[in-house]
Image 1 (cartoon, one colour):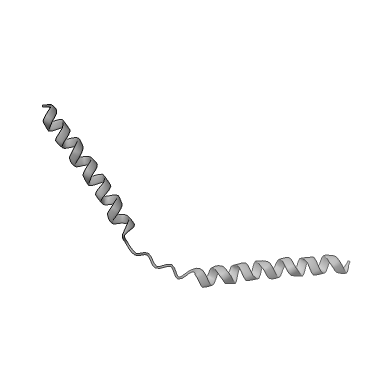
Image 2 (tube, one colour):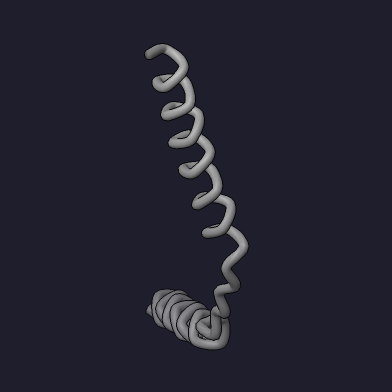
Length: 57
């Protein structure tokens, strides 16, 4: 009985680690870099305009 339990635990452990490894090798392409820079540029422009507006008053 102990050997069956040991083999079952070993098999489950092996299969659970194998799926993690396979998930990490999947290629994910991210095309949102341009939109991120546009968003950050607009935020920077708003901050600069607010600073200029504050300096004029």
